[in-house]
Amino acid sequence: MRHLSRYAGALSIIGVACTTVRPIKPLEYIPQHYPDVVWVTAADSTVVPLTGARVVDDTLRGMRRGTQDTVALALTDVRIVTAKVPDHKKTAFVVVGLGTLTAMAMYEFAIRKQGDQGGGVNCGVYQSTMEGDPGQPRPDC
Image (tube, rainbow, N blue to C red; front, side, top):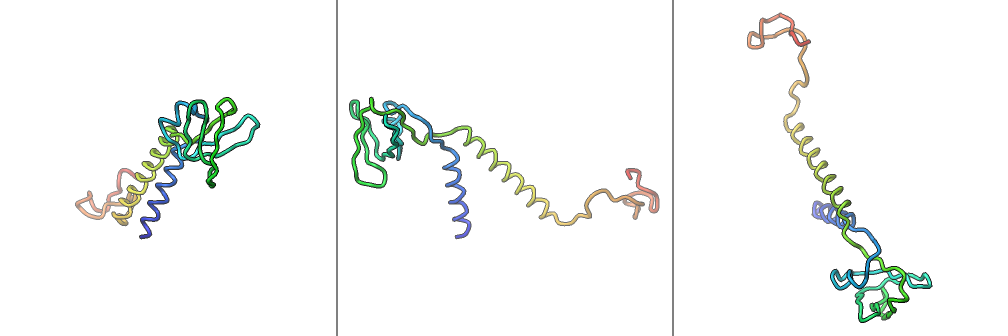
C-alpha cells in the first residue's frame, strides 16, 4: 500500500511537470482539446477562471470555476485566454531525470548485492602460487 502512494505521488508530479499554463487561441484550442479550466483576462484586466469553456459564434461561454454561475464574454472583450497545455521540454527533462535516477538505483543495488569483495587493488606481495610467486611484490603497485 505504501508503494502505491509513492507511485501515485510520482505520477501526479509527472502530470504537473508535463504541462504549462500558456496563452491559447480560444477559437482553435478549446474545440480541439476541451481544457478543464481556462483563465480569461477581460478588457478591464479581471481574470475569470472558466470550466466547461466553449466558443459559440463570437462568444466565450462557460461556468465560473467553483460556482454554478454561467459566464458569457464576447471575444472582442477578451484580451488573453490561458490554459494548461502540454510542455514537451518539461516532459523530456522528467523522462531523462527518471531514467538517470533509475540507472543510479540499479547500479547501487548491483553494487550492494555483490557485497564486500575486498575492494580495490590489493597491493603488497603475492600470497599464493595462483596469483604469482609467493612473497614477490605485485607489479601494479
